[in-house]
Image 1 (cartoon, rainbow, N blue to C red):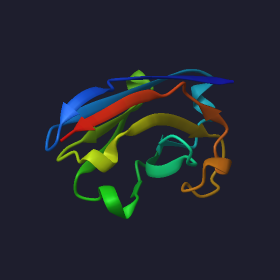
Image 2 (cartoon, helix red, strand yellow):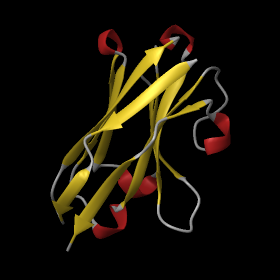
Image 3 (cartoon, one colour):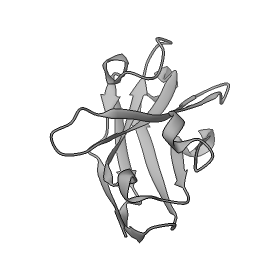
Length: 124
């Protein structure tokens, strides 16, 4: 089992920045990739970004390319999401997820473990 704990959410003005962190514990050696998803009320969780744990290959949804950066610190078993130039439409609960095997990264169904989520609110 892998446990994930997100932190770093909050309230920020349009154009501001936030950095989300997701600390993994447990059988972290079994992780293949980690990702970030976000969800607004009444909608499904949408893919935001992902990173392969060993190679560090990154993936982004188009709406965040050039504004968000995903990275990982293998020594700390932590993945980060640096969010810059935030927009009101970025407001959501952000979830960290991990998968045990290479399956693709953009569907929430491909992930095995989830954090509890952290709220990000961008005010205009």
